Image (cartoon, rainbow, N blue to C red; front, side, top):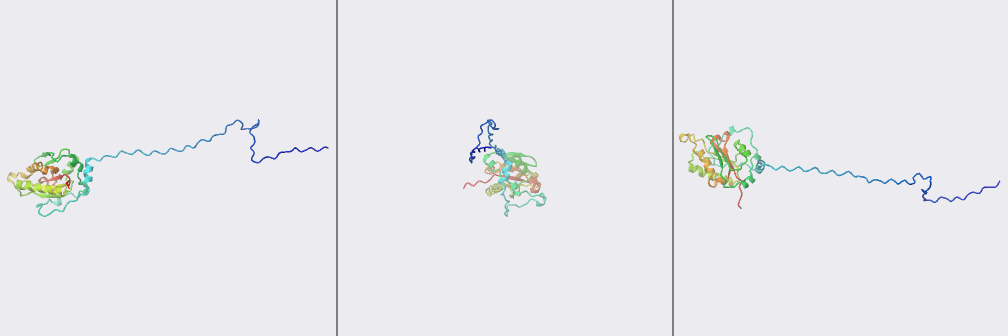
Length: 238
């Protein structure tokens, strides 16, 4: 029986790629899938900034006086002190006494005072003065930094003493002072002469340029026999 000749087989070439042509190619005519680019998550937008609240006049006034300290009263200024035992148990904080510096710039120094006068109470302020601050002044919520007693003085003497005291207090940077004028119990017909003249004195001459407001004091500071006075901020000309 004759032997069959073995067919010569060509050894496969390394790295050769099989042809995709032919009827038995399962992926013939199929497009390769394209990889979609990864979508990165969008960066979170920063939260919208809240509009800053504009502080009102009262807040500015309170912040401006945070460094105000009551001065040690000198000798010979006051002859009759208010009764400290009648003061409320709480004490006012220093940061409650501030100056409305911006209000001083807005209000003309020559502005007339709006005055309210009754048998017992007197009060006044420059036009445009904050109602909140006026109410706090009437409640005695601002610590008194200095005060003077006008008892026993004539009208001429009292006006001169008052003018000198207020000008000196203003130059020292004081903002809230107390003026004790008395109730007129020892005067003729029990008429409080000095009390009636005070609104006139505060509204004329050099004094009216440094006074912001005034009001009858609380009982522990002299009551209807005394008044609180708020002064403008001292601006050095140097």
